[in-house]
Image (cartoon, rainbow, N blue to C red; front, side, top):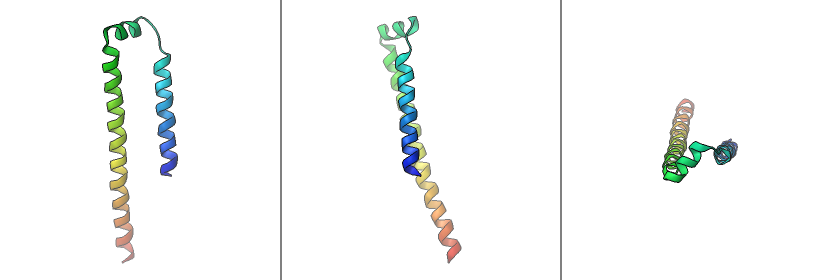
Length: 75
């Protein structure tokens, strides 16, 4: 199950980056010329990394609680 979630996240991030790289236009050129596009991309990447880390943290906590509930019911 976790292996499938990992692949799903990988594909999702791949399609996001492919879509972002394909966009062109005057706004994109302006942001690139002033250097602000890198700030925008960095903020988005940090946000996604933080969200993924939070999801893994919550998954570990929930797994631990599920194990405690399962073990409590058997004794």
